[in-house]
Image (cartoon, rainbow, N blue to C red):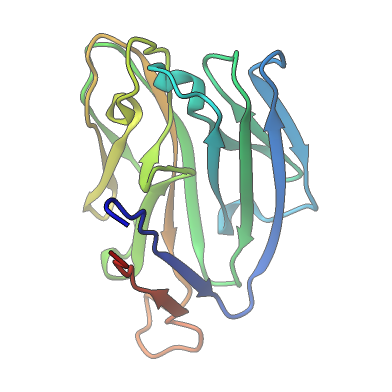
Amino acid sequence: LSNPTVWSHQTVTFNGSNVQTGYVSFTATSGNRSFVNISSVQLNRTFILQSNACNDGGTNIARCLVNARFINSTQIEFTRAVSNVIVDVKWFVVELANGSFVQSATINFTAAETQQNIAISATNLTGSVAFASSQFLGTSTGITNFTSNDVPGKSSFTFNLTNTTNLEITRIVPDNSIANVTFFVIQFNGSTTPGAADAVPTMLIDEPTNTS
């Protein structure tokens, strides 16, 4: 192979967690919102992860991006900004064991904004992570109305816990378009008491291999 495609994946097991999963498909002519019912969860210890693929070979990144958020404890909303292509979404809802703490919100960015600081409840920095609900092309993404090319940075974000009560969200490439993103800040069970049961999740990692 002269230009091999290389993928890596991680399989993570959290002791005592409950996982729900499924698929959502947007057709070329369907609307830009889809709702999925789930079994009831505790929102303060549950997060969403979703990845998606679209059949667009053109230069319109907005058509391939999907955002996911909780409407309530029994329903998820999937949203895209632009239609006209088929988009398939694979989602996971992960409810963590007692002792974990999850915070989430959907944040809107204007065309001029590149960074926002979001106040959060105090979290332990040594046992917490932050990311977007959507993982498209290996990065945390939201949705955008940018349709002029296929650069995913128009709705790609980084998340930085700058202190125990602040989440810094930075948009990679704003370029006169609006965007929004749903974030989750997770403080894992046991992070306030090192050595407690279930403090460290088990993780299996497949490293990428180049076969060329």
